[in-house]
Amino acid sequence: MTWLTTGTAKLAALITLGWGGALPTTGADTISVGSNSLGAVVGASSSDRLAFNLPGGAVAVADLFHPSAAWNGRVFVLHAGHAIDVTSSGTSGASMLEMLQELLAAGYRVYGLSMPCNAPQASSCAFTIGSHSYSLASHSAFQTAAEEGPRTIRYFVDPAIRCAVDAKARYGSSTPVYMTGISGGGWTTDWAAALSELFAASYPVEGSLPYQLRFNGAGTPTGDWEQWYSAPWFSAVGLTCEELYVLGATSGRRRLVCYGKNDPVFPTVNILPYVEAIRLTGRLLCGAGFDIFTDDAATTHEYTAAIRAEIIADAGAL
Image 1 (cartoon, rainbow, N blue to C red):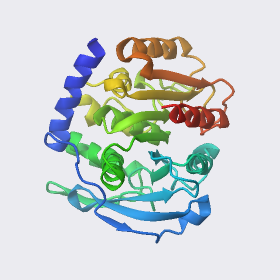
Image 2: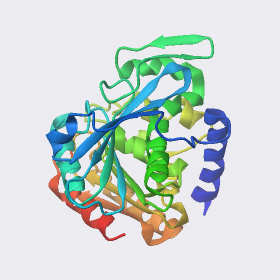
Image 3: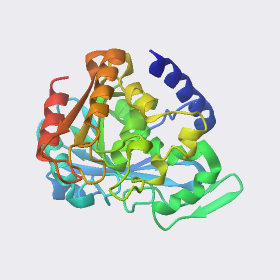
Image 4: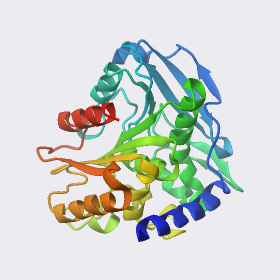
């Protein structure tokens, strides 16, 4: 049980360093009901624009899509990663739009997010931490704020957690909330599920691998800086990706990690024994709630048809 016991202690230490001891407990600060034209684009009955005030003056924006089909009583948080928003085709042809449409068709209400400093559906990139002010032009520039230490993880994770809080407050505390995201959104899903048990199920897609396993053919590390073990949310408490993976399945929650075998960003074709070891360890520690799905036919960094079908079927069976 080492990964669970040590990982839980490390997360508690990170919550102290990053949040002062407690995760967010409030939903959206403002909501513009029915004011979002994106609903018509994706086939939703309507969509709302939500804003979350973050530390230092930053503002995170989310879109709440309401299904045209009868609501099934459940909610998904859908994280677009580095795509502009959840209605775009995204990184390397990743079809966020198809994932969103299929969730809506299945009757879910969907909160849509993307990474900090990915306009328009992201944080305002002007904010102050302590005595330092930042005005960032892109997501990659966010690395300059890493000097502030673990508390900067809030700009990545708070919007997702507060979407879950908002859903519970808006639709009832017993409403199941699930989360999925691709690429950087998959990485955010890893963190959100590990930190908060508000997420009854998590489906990260092609979102992360331990840093020591992420190299391209030239031996260059892949992935964004926030995924490196030198990032303060890892280094300050000594947390590992393996601990992060299993912590998202504690307390009987569902966690299905999705990979594409020949995904060009996080390919698993050369590390299949590692992937299987993680699957077996996760099931040993967390029971049947933990599993890994690999699309053996995947050659692109996207929500493939097979991955989308697996998520819809798995969530529908909960």
